[in-house]
Structures are given as C-alpha cells and as structure tokens.
Image (cartoon, one colour):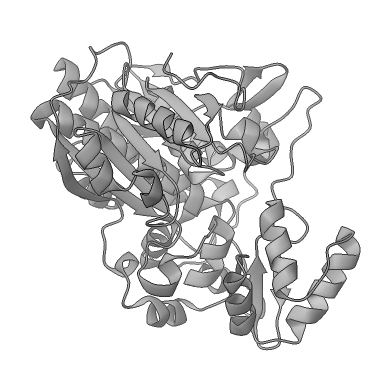
Length: 457
C-alpha cells in the first residue's frame, strides 16, 4: 500500500509491513470524490504498525496485526454512534455551527462552545437570544458582507468563522507557511533522557504514561487509541472550560479524566509533577499557547528530558493563521475540501465523516508509538507534530474521482457489529484493530469526565 509506505517513512518505519486487511477497501459509508476511505484505513494502519514496532523494540517480538476496513469506517464516525442507556445519541453541532451564504460566497462558523457563540454574535453586533431568532439575524448580517470580511471580523473578536476557499486559493493564502511543506507526521529530535520505559506487558504500550491535554475529537481519538494499546492515559481539563456533553463521554473513553486549574501556582505545580512521570505529553492548543505554562516542546525538553511531546494544531502556520483556533469543519472549508466535495458547484460540500479529526487522531497515536520505539532503542525523545491542515493537504494531494455509487450495508447495522458496552448503559464503537488475533478493547470504563484524582493510577 503506497499511501501507507509514505506515512511510515515519516514515522521512521521504512520497510516494515503493515497490518493484514480484511473487508471492503472502499466502505460505502465513506464514499467521497476524495480519498476518504484510503486515508482513514491508512491512518489506523499506521498506528497499528507503529504499535507492533514498539512491541518489537520492547520485547524482541513483533505481534501479528490485522485490521477490518468496515471497523475503520465505523470508528471514523464514532461520535455519531455513541448511545446512552435509552439508545439516544448526542448532537455534535450547535445551531450556529453551520454554513452561511455571504455576499460573495460562503462562510462556515463554529459556535459549539458558549464562549465562541458569544464572540461570534458580539463581533457582528448581535445580541444572544433564542436559536431561531438569532439564526435569522445572523443569516441576514452575514449575507450583507463579503465572506473574507466576516472571517476577519469574527476571528478578530475571538470567534470562529472561515470563508470558503478553493484549493488554489488556500495554497496562495498559505504558501509561506509550514503546513504546506512539513511532513504529514513531523518528527524531530527533542532531548535525551535517562528515564527508561516501564517493563513491557501484554500490550505494546503497557506501562507507558500519557498526559493528555487535548479536547474535542482529534486529540482524544489519538490518546484513547494509545489507551487501547496499553498506555495509562490521564486527560486534564481546565475547570473553567468544561467539555461539551458529547465529548465529556466520547472524549474520555479509554482514559482517566481529571481537571486542574493551571491558572494557579498550585495547579501548574501539580501539572508538572504529573509530567515528571509521563513518558508522553500530547497537547492540542495553538502554537505557543502553552508557553506560559512551561509546556512548549523546548521547555519540556529542558525541564523534563526524555519526555516525548506530541503537538496537535488546526493550522500550524506562521503569521495570522498560526494564532487562530480551528476545528475540522472549518479546516475543510478553508483548505478547499468544501468545494472539492460540492455536489453542484454552487455550495460547498463536506466529507462523509470528520476525517481530518479522526485520521489526525490515529496519526497522533502512530507518531507517539513510533517515538516510544525510538526512545526504547536509543534513549532519545522526539517532538511529534501534526495538524488538521496538513492532513487536509494529504487528502487533497491524492486527487479526486467520482464517488463510488453503492448502497452498501445499512450504516447503523454495520456500526452495531462493532458496538461495545461502556458501562452505565452507554455504548460506542470499539477500537479498530487486532493484535495476535485478539481485538483491541477500551480500558477505564465507564467513562467518567473529570472524576479521577490528579495523579497516576
């Protein structure tokens, strides 16, 4: 699989065989004019391959790895298939998180979090109120302004709005940035430490401690996959920025979850005490946003040598874009994916899943596992960086073809094949992949958002 070979080269895992694949290589539920199915399968395959390499580095034996492509398709839509005790799901998008027609094009907004909703409305001179009324007012205001002006005004006020661009327009806008030139998974030497990995266990990452400072989908997908592969993952949230209902369950599967107020001296000290024992730190903030906490890669290398740092960002760019927040839906629209998936050429389309989030999440896991394998062999720590914009470029670079027309299986019936109980009546999709013929499973069940003590179990 040439596409997988390229990713493995980024990870420093050249000439290593990927997993045995079973199932349809083009699951109908992932049908798209872009290479969604291929990218989804390769991202998960990369994480399993890196896990097998880590097992080899720690034990001298490489486990047999296998992957069901239909399982991948269900996992790529995992937040859609989350169910409570009554069989109900949770809507992932708020009413003001949507596509709007501007005076000269289209704008995508993101207002799932209350503070982003407030900033969006205030930036355009609107008062908050009932959703139906606010939607009508917002539609009217945006329709009267150019798309780029809406983007500029809303971002300037701390909100989130992105003008729809073609791929060529995005490339022109971002040609002086790192996302256009960096590898899909960028791995650079960081530090050398004397802290050895824990003794190996049943799974490739058994005994590895992962400190998770991520939110929403991409980061949590990556860290929960590390949990499924044996790592002890501790997620930390800011108590002043509570997670949304969907992600307070979906985002803490496979890990322990706690909260710390890093704005206080005691909170920062507690954070660094945890980091002192961590093998891997995964962060999901804008470049430089964690510097005040001493958590930028160079600071971690200085204070906690040997710790692997994985950084996730939306744009990973210098200049204006580097300081902006972003989510999968916004990156799709900004980078040209919206127009590349349009069904009629008059309104941007979207991918059949939040691929940028999910694929990047599995690449986070792959990068962390490859870096752990390197550390097990050499003692060297690595800075692994990924971004949604880079994953978007990777997807677009594969070109487009007419989406395959196939009725396929009923999506819900298909997803239920891979459903697993989480506890307390909740259920979700199990982690994709097999090691030595045994399916992966989730630890730390049932999910309990911010209920764990701030220490390693």
